[in-house]
Image (cartoon, rainbow over all chains, first blue to last red; front, side, top):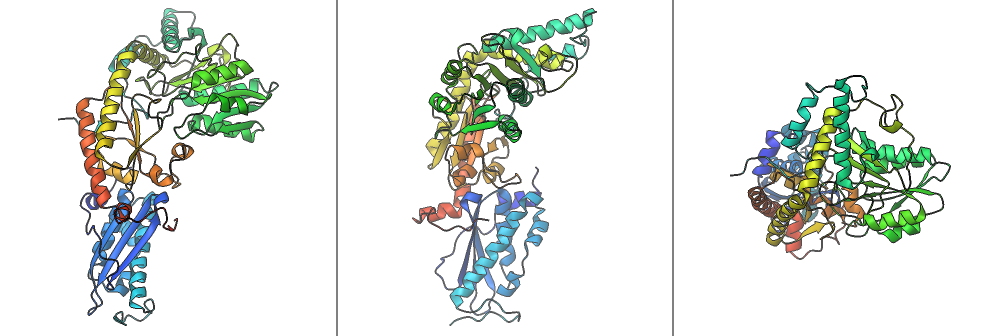
Length: 142
Length: 405
């Protein structure tokens, strides 16, 4: 099965590989998947406390090329978004952007799960409820 | 410089040897006769070529040419052996014994026989992938008609103690089928010495063409009989009707002839390449594991798990090298290789496995290129792996409650 050029590009030049200190209160960490299933993604966001914007994002992924590409793309998309906006990233957008074949759709689902897990972790640390339906910036501090 | 892509998937298929192709070509054009045509020289010529091929195959496995039945490949051979015995010997018994690491062309016919009322015992294997004669003996009942064992496994290369199992079968008067697809032409196989009654082999695994195989059917001590799977002109002693694929049969014969003559030298060369590859990779990369038996294995096979790196992900990094992975990321199910599972290799390491299959046409330069590439890519992917990072931090990743998906 040939891979799309975009998958190969992300696989060969993954963006934002690395880690933040998971204990940092401005950092949210999502760890999803399982080694025995062949996919584990760790995705982290760093949120600017004054603007509520995701300033930086990093990932590490154990998985196939499509899983690596999906998480690499996710970190690119996360940067500059508000946490609320980030919640709106859908796996179908990743499927479309990377032209993932049907058998690889689960990689995009995992990336969406990782984004949501990282945001949840961030919120838990901020000791606030998950984003309400209102579009207000996330409260910081507390 | 080596020429890319490099083919290192010889357990999957092999390149047809140019000498084999040369032997086949006249049988498409000027020597196109039907081997069953008894009334003219075209038929006689084709028949003579088929009989020569029969002898060439027989010579490689210590049989007589009369005991070779031509088929479309090893899948058909194994189906004919198992189902043909089940139908022919149903008055004698309906119990079959096999192993957990057989190829699907044995396991699936057995599953069908089970659905049709036969009893099937699937023996577990040890951590190297071997089944032992005593296990076979203990599994036998007075209803056992056939034992089917893979001589050398296609994924992990482990060679089974076929001779010992054959002796148990002889002692108990039970028929013995051997899937010798991977071992024929690579390691010595002798149907007399090993007590084999039925043996399946394939053309394209021995540098012959795809689409042809053979089934050895013992003619005496005992004379094995099979119920045919298809009815027609009564070819192949009535066991496999259908016009013989003369060019392919000639190719299979030529391939077996070359294998018989060159095996001693070739297996040494392939083994040396395999060891160069295995040591090159495993000495440079920590936490790599050889799956299968350390010594009782096919000379060309190295199945290696690279901890913290997913096999399919690694294959993308070494995409100029044709290999296989025990990760089943591409298949409909997300389950890794059932063979590695049968050995007790954990799912995580099964997902991290790569099968390298070296063969006749590989070179030292190719091996060196692959070693460098694999070491570089595994190191890169480990730097990208959250599991590797956790282990570096002293976290026991087996203690984490992963959410299976």
